[in-house]
Image (cartoon, rainbow, N blue to C red; front, side):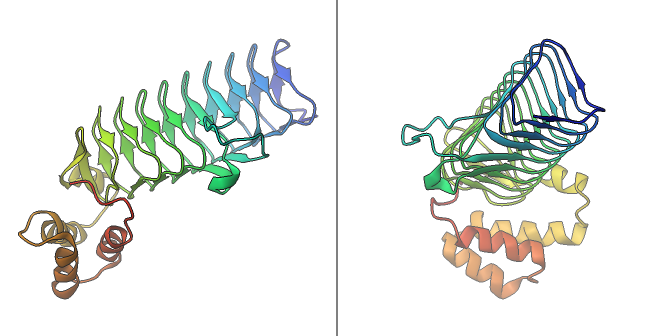
Length: 263
């Protein structure tokens, strides 16, 4: 056990031998820290928070009461192999949220970027790869092996099926069933999921230039709002648009889809 002398640990908290508690950490009443956990500088575990497994949590992250971070995967194929969960800096993991470690068959690591917010009851499944600034609203669930890009928002009570990819800056509305890939920079909602244009508000808030948004809108129309099929739309966009990086990424994401694109 290695507890930095500047850390504050409540007497009722359980810190198992082998855990590493960084400088400035605060461990609240009845919190549990497992033997293979590493907490970065200034991590806060509020009362009754559980962090276990082979788990690393980045500086400044806060884990709220009754969240369970680093438990074993909810996968019947899991046989106790030693797999990891890595959470970035300054995340907020709210009450009752669950984040699981990976599986050997899925690469062995569940990974979460920086500055993410997981609201009450949100779930991140085994081997999922989440970017930075991702928001999962209340009870949103990300299944195993999913890939979620930077700046994605998933509305409350939505479920993202295993192996689905959601592109960066996408917005998924509440109560959605996401069984196909969601391209970057779009709005999607429904059961089954349907696309409803670009995530213009999100792009504006993220500082996208108007010229970039215009080109993305043209690419979206070619692919999803024309008489062309999807492959023809991509081909036409490549032929007629300025292939700036965001447009190129949008088209490459569609071309790389293995599950199809929700529209």
